[in-house]
Image 1: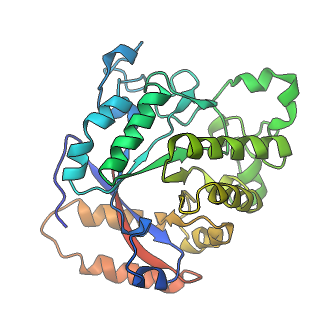
Image 2: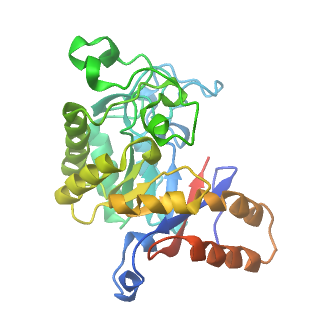
Image 3: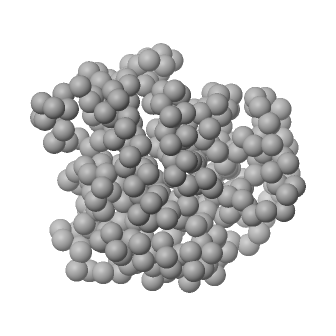
Length: 313
């Protein structure tokens, strides 16, 4: 496959591992495993509407740079011409100050004002669908942004786990209940929290007709909650596709999350191999595919090493 070099300096290839029977692919139907996914950090992509830049400063790596929904919509033809059939967007919700990356959620029901309005996002989805391009939206249920207003709201005092860092990464209880990077850790065992996050996810599906969620920090939330979440959002849209981020070098740990119902996962165990394979041109990739086949032998359950998702930074 030939990949055209765009305006970005670096392509990182991420192998998606989908825990589904091979019979899925024998049907001849187009599935998400057939898609070539283009990952976009919204703020860093293209500035289509300078009027929403506010205090953006492209010279400051920790500030907003001006990328927005209109900028992505303007470049859909270019993305299509490069051969991509799906787009994964970093979180687009209203964020706490300096949350240009999107992972410091402030309000799950509002778009980030630096990125544009809800109507502009709906236009992006509609225009993508006209080109048969799917839209995958990043969704974070583990935590909210630093200094979130909920922390000082007495009615939400029990919405968070006690503030404590993760010191033992082999202790799953700590991994699930500790504050990752000191971010307020939501307690999904609280029925109000559980329902709030699910309702927000369902609202975005209903309002915008997105095609999937990329689920952030999956291993930091209990499997029982993911089962509940997956069941609820799939009921809202049956063919919704869910990609989980279980950041672990052991593929069997990643594979253990198959029971949650999440459709596919990033194979972080292949990260180093993929970087080595694609950092130089004109070299044989036979060793890479041999390594992938060897990894498959150790993964539990029926799996397919299906698609390469190309992301840009």
